[in-house]
Each structure stands twice: as structure tokens, then as C-alpha cells.
Image (cartoon, rainbow, N blue to C red; front, side, top):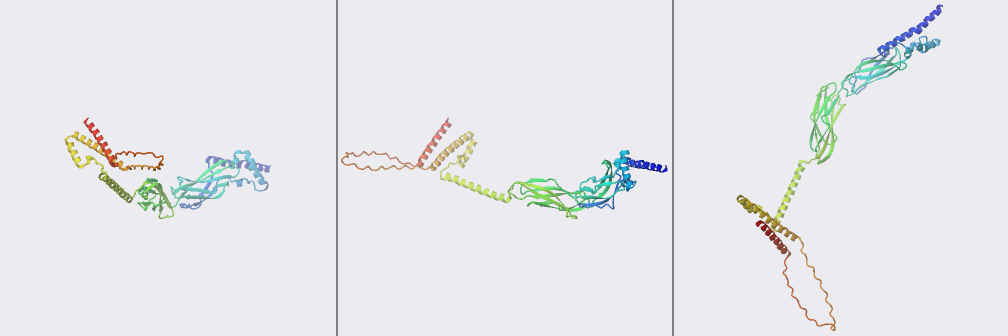
Length: 452
């Protein structure tokens, strides 16, 4: 009888007391939503060197409160005891208490690393990122890898490692977060920003840019700056080196001289601005501007030569036309404007002072006389250009053969008619006479108009 009572008591403990422990673990997880995991750094956290990956060792410890490895074989791990443990934990308990089913087995933990605050320039990752079979007392070695670039804004950041536990059936159990402060070593970084990225100017001109250089590093440093271009442009900076505090900005003036080109349809020239720390010269920061040249350019020497050539051409032109006009007056008798003759100008001035109406009539008469003289002169020059017509030679008739004397009639000597021979007048005199007659007719018409 005593033996049976002991067996019943043992079964009561197995069926009810141990599941109560599981129930307490489940209730606690639902209240706190924690993964019940501990992640701590091993040793001292090192400084992160710029552009170099740093490794931080972490230790993983599962504090779930229920060790499934021991629980699934709590009756024993051999023979009948192992079979009884399997039936009890895998069949009986899930039927009696369905809510415990997700906890009756190993859980999985997903690990993730992220940078809090301003993550620009910082990258963090953790490996391994998954613990496949985790239960109470599970330990693992983790590696946190951190990388920082020269573009990082902050030198002190917090890396958060999140551990999320998932139950046997894949449902979320809880998440635990662990914050690890990380600091970078001394970091030098420059930002080069011109006031304008491009400008358009004429050839052989000077253009100016203002370039802002900002120290975005975490320490005071001495920086050097220089320029280089893709072609033969000349670029000069107002400063070649300077000291900058962290976050300070230096204004540098850049002058660019464009090349001499007579005509440029539009050429883009690139000027690169390179800056680097004298302490870390291997890291070079680059900015740039573009200058577009378009238009015409005439150098002073070319303009001087062209001016001399134009003056010579104008001088030859005026001398030629002066000699031509003089020749036309002296040789061909080209008339001059009478109101421009010195004696006539004096006469007109006196006449204008005395009688303005008479002055106007006199001036009109001079203009009419000048027009008539020019008509005569033009006809005369036209006649000189025309070629004289040569008389066509008369055809000589062949002499007729004499008739025989038998058929010859008595012929009277023919009467010779005397032809009047007119005097031959040269063609030039004829044209002159015609022009004079025309001028006289024009003058007569003008006199009639004035009388009327």
C-alpha cells in the first residue's frame, strides 16, 4: 500500500509541479517582454581607427530559467526512463496544458547591431547573428565589428545589440537590448564647397571663386591646399596652408585666368582643389569648379596691327580718290560745286547778310548750273568711253568683159555728177555740240521758270 502511495505522489509531482514552473516562466515573459539574455563586452572596448574595421568581443549568456536539455530527460536518458521522459514532455504535457507547448523545446535568438544617434559614417555588424538552439545556461562568443569613415559626423556613438527570442513554434517571446559606447580615434576630414560650381567668361579674362573649407574632424590640424587643371589654365589660391579648429571654416579665394583664344564657341575647363592634413597626407580631399570660355578675344598687339592696316587702307583710299578727282578736274574738266569755291563762299556770306531771299535764289541758280554742268560732263565722259564706228568698205565690182565689136553700140560718155563733199567733223566735237545744245535748252527752261 505504501508503495502505491509513493508512486502516486511521484506522478503528481511530475504532472503538476514541474509544469507549474513552466507556467511561471511563461507568465513572467509575457509581463516583461524580455528575451532573458545577457550580452556583455569582454575586456576593454578599443578605439575605432578611421577607415579600419575594429573588432569588439562579446559574451552571450542565456538566462531563460528553464533548461530544456535537462528537462526533456529529467526521468533519465537511458532505456525506459528516456522513453517515459519523451512521452511525458512531448505528448502528455502539451495535451494537458496547450499553452506550454511553445516552451517545450529549444528557442532561437536573432541578434542585430545598429548605430544610435547620427549613424553617418558609422557601420556596425555582429556575428553570428543567430543562435539556433538556445536555452537556459547556453553560452556563445559574439563578435561586434565596427567601421568608421572620414565622413563620420560624431566621434562618439552608441552601438545597440538587440537579441530577440522566438519560441519553438516561431512566435515572438521577447527582445533584450544592450548598448555599447564606441569612440573613434582622432579623425581628420575636410569639406570643400565653392560659392559657385561653374562660371562662363570670355577668353583671356580672370574669374574669381570663393571656396569654403571646413574641418569636420575631431582635432586641431594644419591643412595644405593646392590646385590643378585639366588643361593650360592658370589658377591661384589666396592661401596655401592654414590651421583649423574642429568645425571651423576657412574662406579661400581662387583666381582663374582663361587662355587667349581669338574665338571660342564654348569650352569647359575643370579646376580641381585638393586639400590634405600635413599630419595625414595620404588622405586627400578634393573639390572642383568649372570655367566655360565663350566669345571673341583680340589681343592688344593684334588690335594695334589691325588699326595700322586700316589706317593705311583709308589713307590709300583717300589719296586714290583725291588724285582721281583732281585728274577728272584737270584733264576732263569735271565741274566743282560753285558754292564751295572760296570766292563764291565769301559772296554768298555777304549776300545772306544783306538779303536772305536773294541768297536763296543765288544758291538755287548755282545748284542748277552745277546740275547742268554735271550733265554735260557725264555725256562727255560717256562719249569718250564709246568706241567710234568704222565705215564699212565698199565692195568693188569686177570689170565686165568687153563685148565684140559687132554687137557694140555707140556709147556716149557718161555724165559725171559732182557730189558735194561735206567737211568731216570728229565724233568728240559732235558730242560736245550736242551736250552744249542740251545745256542751253535746260538753262532756257530754268530762266523761263524763274521769270514766271
